[in-house]
Image 1 (spheres, one colour):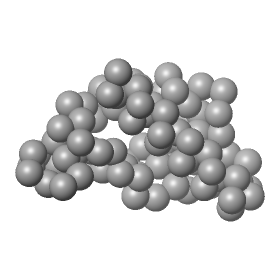
Image 2: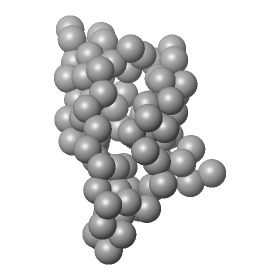
Image 3: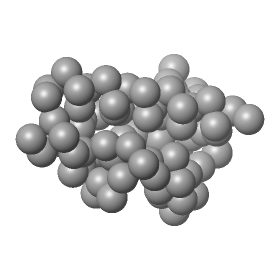
Length: 87
């Protein structure tokens, strides 16, 4: 359940950014995964691909950085680093 909540929040942020920039398509997304999200890059890609179906982010290229420090204040977070849109 935690993963779905994180992914829903992420997709909302991506959609908002794309719309604010007047983009019609998200071509790239750069994220940071905290140690306590319990998602590997491959696992994240699977969730992202599924959640992005039918959205502006469908087919977007992913750049994923992982952190292994459970004491990091953002260890339970997925942080959106950047969104690249195509207009």
